Amino acid sequence: MKFNFLSESDQAYYIHKASTLVEALPYIRQHSGKNIVIKYGGHAMGDEKISKSFSQDIGLLKEVGINPIVVHGGGPQIGAMLKMKNIKSKFIEGLRVTDKKTVKVVEDVLSNDINSKIVEGINTTGGKAVGLAGHLDNIIEAEKLEIAIKDSDSNIEKILDIGFVGKPIKINCDKINENISKGLIPVIAPLGYDKRNSTYNINADTAAGAIAGAMKANKLLLLTDVPGILDEKNKLISSLSAIDALKIINKEYIKGGMRPKINTCVNAINNGVKEASILDGRIPHSIILELFTEHGIGTQIYN
Ligand code: ADP
Ligand code: MG
Image (cartoon, rainbow, N blue to C red; front, side, top):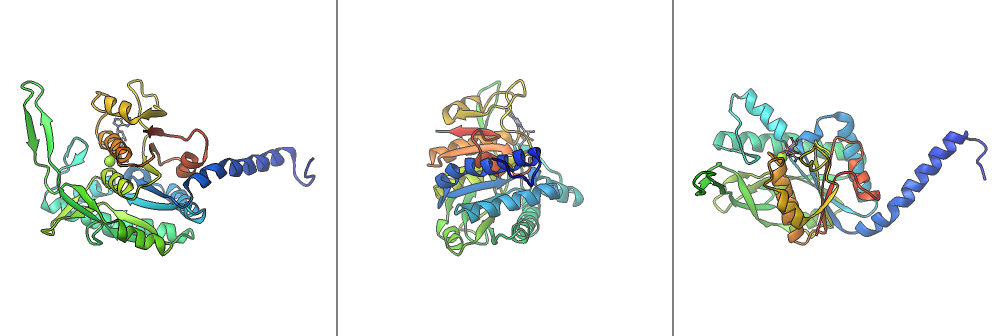
């Protein structure tokens, strides 16, 4: 059977397109009515074309009955603003050391600048997004994060003070659900508050993981600027269990921002999230490729 108005190659193209849709069906069924948390990394949001394909993917998820919840980062943009203001950036264990001046810049860039751009992007491609700030909308209650570092010579642990960096202690799911039930796509800036009204900078991966756990998400997707977790030979690890992920986390070849990512995935799974993936957000339609195709594209971490 041929459709005689098309060339052979066009026919093959459209048949392939149709089969792609059919291939997506079981995955759509699997996630329909469920929450999927997507962390949109600062590194993955540079290019206009990619931002558009991200917005389209998010809109498509909502259209097929899945509830996407976006949590965004903004590392490079925060870095650029700090540089402009002559404030030095320093990282420990992939986390930004955040003094009072820095937290003000973080708050400004995340909740005013980046958040509204993402909301606008989703809305111009036909979705309905709502911008929420983890601190102002009382979504992320946090406390100061303490990081312990072991001195390699003496083996003595010392606690490092990295300033206004928080860890989430409670997520206000009602507030998120309230927006989902209105048909909106929540876009959340990773800032936290505490009872004394301090504002905390929270690593966006950590915030996304905590939200995924609290919202019992089917899936957590961490979009970044590398294909996934790369091994010592720079080869993509396409899947591994949460137990194996913990085994590699302190290896030499896992550095910087990848450590909090792996930790986040493991914690999310321990909190009831079914699967977590780290994937390359620079690939057009990376979300659709990861969720709706058999092999996915990044590193999948499972229970
Ligand atoms: P994001 O803005 O997406 O959170 P980060 O810079 O915080 O990005 O984290 C991603 C970075 O982690 C990568 O760009 C890469 O340089 C670094 N990284 C360190 N170790 C690894 C590894 N083993 N595999 C992949 N990326 C790694
Ligand atoms: Mg990061």
